[in-house]
Length: 384
Image (cartoon, rainbow, N blue to C red; front, side, top):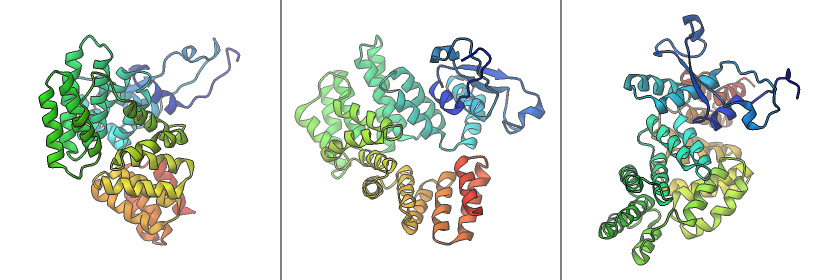
């Protein structure tokens, strides 16, 4: 590549990958330019995230890369600044901006975190903390952040006791959010055991069994009571599940299926396992198996909207319009202001021949996020 050639890049993919490694800058744009990127109510200068020097990623020396300010650079700049700012007013403004552009931003950031778990626990933890900045009631981010803190404590971190204390706090919060989930009780008990209060750990496990006799993942609690905990990091099964999450929503859904099949047999009441397994099957084109797994996840976790979201997508893939409408409406009952759910409802109604209902649903989503790619794709279906 010559010095004057330009390398085209996927800005979104680059900036997602370098959310905590790129350079954050502030752009003092004039009022007429600000309107292209942010609403009038947004306070302060415009945050933008630039990726690290291209040479660090293996491009030829001397190659030039053109990167203009775009919604990508601003969106990920706002995410990065939200993670770093200590200014409460500024944080509120950034959070509002991010969620206005992408209501599913917390879920996206959790997926980024899971992609970093194996390579860099500290970076993964930063992502989880950022997701919780945007949605303090996000169970998966809370539980996974606790797992990161616990894994760091077990990796010989100098602040072991502080890490264990942080993990304990995360797991207690996770229990408040989803008290029927055995994983959080089990995780809390393990931390208490490592803190030297084994009696408290036993009491936590016994409390779960007493209060949730039909709770998901009960087997792992019973096993811990029978065999106790060892002073070690995450189990092989937990590592496998985390890897499977990365694969299912990344580039190797078949690998996720292979990892999760034995876990599903070992923990048949775990909604999280069935959800990720169903997502993997959907992405490799196993529509019938995806629908079966996701229906089971929905039965085990009836208050989790993202399970209904993935189930709706499975039904749409199979052109089963009525079940797709039903699951989309269930998702909206749990999260009425989610434009992604409205788009899927609109697609289901369009498949059923209810054009008026489809236009209403997709139009409502367009009012919330007019530039969202899924909204634009759904509008194109209406015009076809």
